[in-house]
Image (cartoon, rainbow, N blue to C red; front, side, top):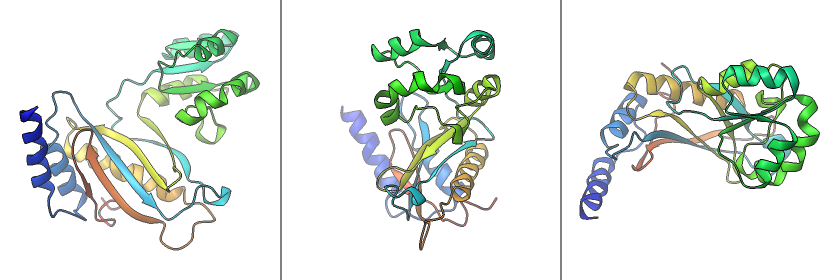
Length: 232
């Protein structure tokens, strides 16, 4: 425990007084202090000037990170017949219909993304209380309700990231691993920030993006200079 405490103290000291850094400088700082024994995820948090409780201020979307997430994404697909075969061939780990509903109701949630063909949605609707709070409910707006299950599965496994504003107006996601090259992390972060900017809702008033911060899984966060987060 003493070694862990020393590492945390050293990390806090390295971040002390640092704020609104240029993106490349912030990435280098986060990478240098990601000292856990596992490959930490680099996470982004964006504080937005919206109230997601209002329908015209909801922020939701999807972005394909240019350098992937570094995460092995497990995909579940609700489909039957040829579309089920298509999903399996594309690499989906779990494919089914009524049997998949029963499995999820029994507590089996060993997946990161759920995709469904449109005809399966009445079935999937039974799982709203389970999948909804975990942000796993298929949605046509982010391409997870589709007949093109092959493309959806491949996108999920290839670095596609979904985002949705939480109650406090915060959007967060993993944008790569600490082991990634700094330039690749910066490219992923800019792609994510730009996607959130494009998703600005009609009801947003005043300042839309208030603050952007990045951190590693176990490390402190540091805020970014907003201009550098959008310009390469």
